Image 1 (cartoon, rainbow, N blue to C red):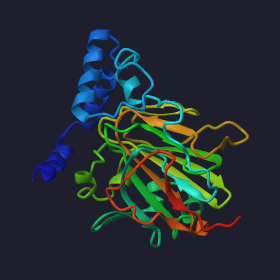
Image 2 (tube, rainbow, N blue to C red):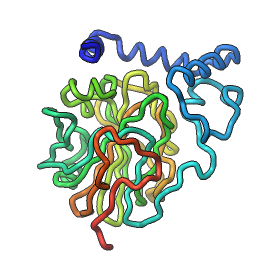
Image 3 (cartoon, rainbow, N blue to C red):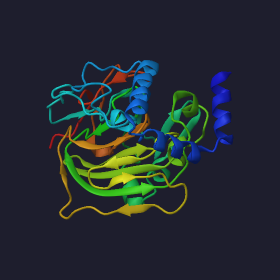
Length: 287
């Protein structure tokens, strides 16, 4: 009952105004205030700190710096098998499986099309029509940085304006087409096994998304899909390399083409916890 009420309440909330407020508060640098915010955040969400090589809260300029914290060297070893697809984030697996005729599973009775998610030309979205997907949710207490789940060349970056619904489990189960409604940043890769994509999905209180190639991207509700500039030649990305980060918990979706073959690791069910660099899939592609 409370979960349903929370979802319905989101339709009434000024979602962009609330997100803008969180963005400002998270950047307060006054030591007494930011230290209080960080300590209370850690206590409220029971944040794991053993893999952070820093003094908390003193070594962080503000709450946002703590949200986007780096981890100690070696804290997230990356599976070195060339055929392994690794988790891009620390989080909980929402769903993973086959893309059936271009439709991606969201929750029981709910799905959406790859074309709507990517909002790009048919040739790009068509590569995933019979491919595979994995959707991973980052809770507020998780490490918020996103790393490459495979090696490849970053061919294109698209920013898609959209809404800012929460992406927690209660909302995913009740808001139709949630991931194609919310704002998102789509990274398109060319890999040895074909085209692949990593989608950063924005959400309520996620004040921005940042990547090494774009800098900070603030939420924008309306407008057309924007092609973001990239250096030429296209940047090469190694598996495990940093792709960007969220300012609060959100969701990342990995899309693989049918030609990649293989499958997701058995036993990874909805709700399974995963960590950056952990094997979540194995390619059938032989090279």
